Image (cartoon, rainbow, N blue to C red; front, side):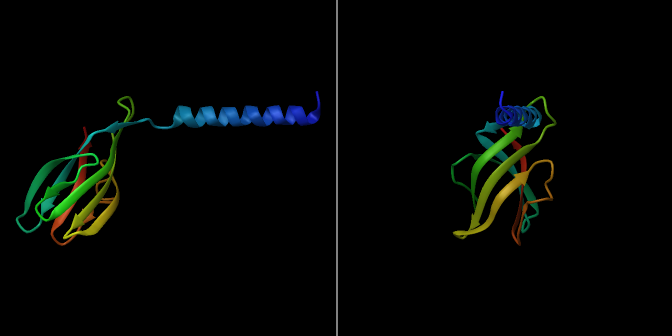
Amino acid sequence: MHTSNILGMKKIFAISIATFLFVFNANAYINRTTAVVDILDKTSGKNHVLNVPVNQDTSYEKLNLLVRTCKQTDPFEAENAFMFIEISQNNRIIFSGWMNKNEPGENPLQNADYDVWLVRCE
């Protein structure tokens, strides 16, 4: 065998092992059809839990919520959920990004009227 063939085979083997390790250790996520969110109305001081279907505009008082995706971890992994959501108020986007159930303070909507957090995906 030529040295170049051996080096090529070693590269393919190394790439295969790296791919296997990445896939084996990667978390599996399950797409869900509904995001359950907790909304705090700061003017009334009341919390409201709302089911928001994925890819359907949902209104709550002055807010319009559009969840693009809601994912949860595989049931055999530590439980967590993530959603990508766009929130608008008066036809102006006030939040667009990911929310993480286990890290509610990391990236919630916090504005003068409302706070919004992800509770779970269903």
